[in-house]
Image (cartoon, rainbow, N blue to C red; front, side, top):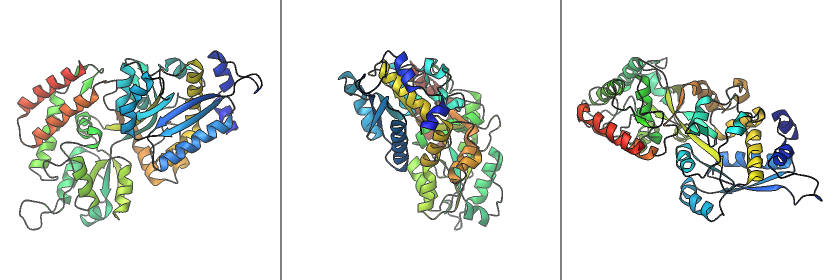
Length: 419
């Protein structure tokens, strides 16, 4: 691990000295700078993250990080009170959509100078992953996970329907979904759906924005302007509402949990989700494949789900320098590869070779899809209310209400949330 520090160009002692905390021998200093790191990784990814922290601690004598594992909800509930009492963490990880909220409240350190440094190891990061942690033009965190929504499909059902190639365009996708939809008794309710396409409470509410991207649309522009009432979004809604209501490729009124259950029970041939769907499929005995969301008429892009970590405003100069040294270590090529394999998410660095992650087929598939990633509502502070407005729009559209009324109303709701 000391070799990794050297390769990464990380001079921890130098960083601390620049921060005004000169490191020396045990006799000359009070010991290493000690940092507390809160995160919510509780599964195998938590074990891998702990190993990375332990290896970092063992690789040098100037910084010691102690982790505290909490649920993501507890972190969200307790971070600001803890920081107000000067009892919070120096480093904290959280779902990326929450980072702008805390950056806006002054809870995170601006990392612009560190990103600009030659030893930050950020030059090869997925630029959309960096966009995810950028608020008002400045990076207030670093990505620890960034994965696009992708299509999980049941290979056995595809084979039974005679479909050998996964669709590449919306029209091919819709046609395949029709072919995979089975209503054997003709009662109007299929026993098998081609696609589980929920109209509300979707995966991080990123599914319908993904469909908007495909038609050339979006939800918000420059973090402060609503653009949901557009011809492109109308086209996307009309196309997929018709596929649900007229072609019956998916149930109406379906939510995200219901979509998971349809796919895991073998009653839906396709489902849009994240890496956790791999374990759900395996536990259900489904032989599955993973593919990119097919290209719409204007673009191929998918909302990406992410997690980020940042340095809190509680940290002093020495603590900030120590945290930045850890971030540089985290993004070393070897460590980034280790983290990708252990977390099951695609590498955050774009220069990780395919053969480096070949032992994990899920990571291989997600790495191939990674170029379609697009940060969802980057820099938007009140993203929850924005996505609630999208949720209301899509659910009511699938229920049959007029887009002439729904789109202007959604535009006003989103703009109000941004303000």
